[in-house]
Every structure is written in structure tokens, then in C-alpha cells.
Length: 76
View (cartoon, rainbow, N blue to C red):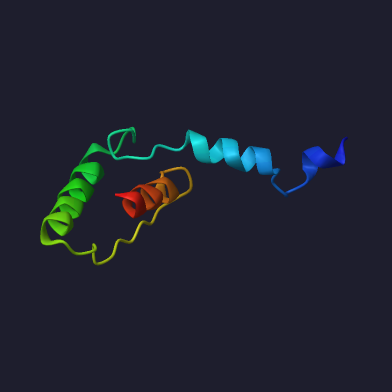
């Protein structure tokens, strides 16, 4: 078997492609409508006050979108 296929190291090209696949806004994020609604309200309230959002804690098993939501919150 080829060693590069088994290597845990990511290629720079793979990292660039992966980042481009993630949604960048809550509108682009698919699923979890209730969570998106709560996040939207909290982000809008902070934006209206002109302050940063206090904090969020995303927890759960792999594949739920925790990292993606963290990136979205950071950009919003």
C-alpha cells in the first residue's frame, strides 16, 4: 500500500479545498434549525448592542458541525 495514502499529515491543497467547502454564514449552514435560530438571536442582540458575544460552548459527537459553527460565529 502507498505510504502517502496512510499518512495522517494533510496536504496543503487538501486543507485549502476543505476550508472552501465549509459554509461561511448561518444561511448556508444546513440543518439544526433550532440551534441556528438561537445563534441568530444571540448574534443579532450582540450586534445591536455593539458588543462581542459573551461565549458559546459547542459540544457533541463528531460530525454535528461544531467546528463549522465556531467559524461561522467568529466571522459573523
